[in-house]
Amino acid sequence: MAAGKIDLRSPVPAYRQLADILHAQIESGQLEPDSPVPSETTLVQRYGVARGTVRRAIEVLRDAGLVVTVQGRGTYVRQRS
Amino acid sequence: MAAGKIDLRSPVPAYRQLADILHAQIESGQLEPDSPVPSETTLVQRYGVARGTVRRAIEVLRDAGLVVTVQGRGTYVRQRS
DNA sequence: GCGGATTTGTACGTATGTATG
DNA sequence: GCATACATACGTACAAATCCG
Image 1 (cartoon, each protein chain N blue to C red):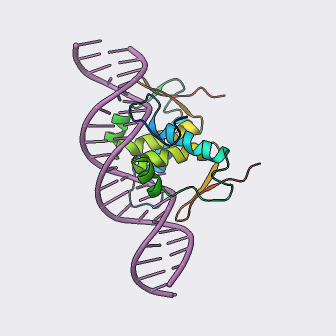
Image 2: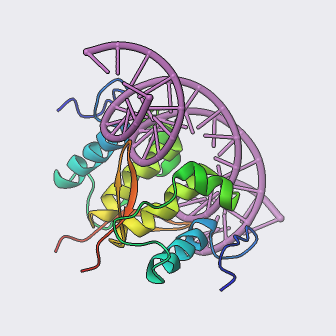
Image 3: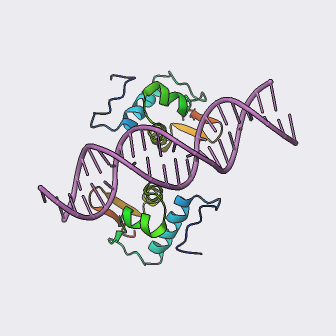
């Protein structure tokens, strides 16, 4: 899985790689329902990508219905249906 | 409607205003099905906003199923169902 | 098939605004 | 008021796909 590292030279876009990583963490329960996803700033530092890239990744998860974002608060893992 | 102008001081985001403008043009038939939406560069010049803003606006239309985008080709108005 | 022009895709960085706590 | 976190908007650079001569 190479979980945790992002390769900018990969044909898979960085935001996709990050979305996959977070997706896997949600699936595995490492990120629990109702708990917050790390803040954008934290993810920027942790994965060494720009904030825009982090936002794109989270957007993917949001579109997939996996997380919910609230301005000023954070992004949270959605309850499983 | 003030169709055609974008006000950066409005509480309505610029990308939303542009999406609404293009949406209206599609609805009115000014932009016909299967015909191309003006290129990002053209929209940048025409409305005086950044390319990122133009892309955000088109993304809204794409998510709404109003247009289809192909890399290297352009964005096209979808056939009405 | 090649090369250039055009157009969309990705990624970076920066600044400022808005909402929450 | 202040700190934190997300939202919007700008600009820049380069990659990838398409088109056309």
